[in-house]
Amino acid sequence: MDDKERQGNPATNAALSRRGFLRAGAAVGAMAAGAGAARAQTQPDPLITEVQPWASGWGDGVDATPYGLPIEFEDDVIRRNVGWLTADTISSINFTPIHALDGTITPTGCAFERHHSGAIELKKEDYRLMINGLVDKPLVFTYEDLERFPRENRTYFLECAANSGMEWAGAQLNGAQFTQGMIHNMQYSGIPLRTLLEEAGITNLGDQIKDKWVYAEGADASSNGRSIPLEKALDDCLVAIKANGEALRKEHGYPVRLVVPGWEGNMWVKWLRRLEVTDEAVQSREETSKYTDTLADGTSRKWTWVMDAKSVVTSPSPQMPIKHGKGPLVITGMAWSGRGHITKVDVSIDGGANWQEARLAEPGTDKAVSRFYLEIDWDGSEMLLQSRATDSTGYVQPTKDALRAIRGENSVYHNNGIQTWWVKENGESENVEVSS
Ligand SMILES: Nc1nc2c(c(=O)[nH]1)N[C@H]1C(S)=C(S)[C@@H](COP(=O)(O)O)O[C@H]1N2
Ligand SMILES: [Mo]
Image (cartoon, rainbow, N blue to C red; front, side):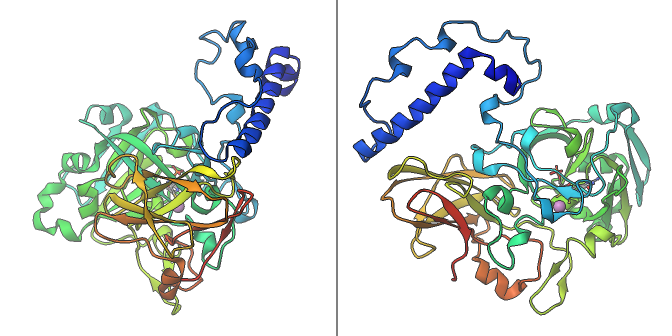
């Protein structure tokens, strides 16, 4: 339904204006009641006393949207760009609206995308995956071949190493979507990479396996080639053919992408077309001049593959102001670690002076996003809101100052420092930093 149609539809108009009334009524109620998330009505509410348009006519038929999108009222929950960040949209990135999401699985249609030469259209019929190099039996698989191998279902986060990369020199972007939104968390159905490498006779390498590498390459013009130590390739990597139960979206690598759990997103090669077993790392562009960390002393650290534990409060946050005033407040966010699972998330409302343990919605799982909640009785005064993740290796998410002591300010990648939102008395918040 476009805007014109909506205006021309009296039923929807009535619904919208009554929704507005509900909001105004709720605000008055909140002030009168002071506390309590649910409150008694102080005046007659037409939403309760009158038959509403949606209850006195037909809804849409079942075939109105053969493949559904979110209802129009949610049309601000979308991927967004930061205009100045890249010169064009071909070699660019957008951001997951993590501020507005809940649970752990990222809805596929708003999961961030990052391409070096644009999202390509590659049909299953035209798809080939080659395994060559130091293998007994070089092989080429079609998509149908891949479907005949036993597959597994596993949920993992993918975080671009550049996530929070704009924040090294200080707080910059106002919104969790922009500061931490280069992440998605999906359930993948795929073939263990080990299975395909074994099919090509890799295990005949015996003891030498430790020193070998797999160079993974995509079918797009950039190819985004990355060298992965064979040990990791044989451990938990997947050649994924589905995400969140359906075919991969074009922008996420349809029809086949590599899943490299816990490691930087750049290694998760999309439109996967070739795996070459090599003696040494290839030293491609993406693993030398890019995705390398420059340290405080000006030298660069080679190969920081793992994404360390990180967390962020998604609400309240700059894009999610508190609208209900003081009283019961749900603080929520997400936490993840590339080294294991999340065991604990602490939340501070005073800039890290005091911490309270948040509630994990479910026990953490390996290399996947955990959801946390902390329910507080907000006294309406300003807060310096932070979250701090601990993972199953005992690693604790560092402050930004602690990170900078080692990394300096000229880094781009692997910024997992603690985020601070300055929540003001009016419920709005801003991206700030506190010294620690
Ligand atoms: N073939 C190919 N694979 C690629 C890329 C690319 O440009 N081409 N971008 C990489 C980078 S830098 C990241 S962060 C992830 C992004 O995955 P997404 O688009 O599913 O978010 O894919 C990686 N795989
Ligand atoms: Mo990336």
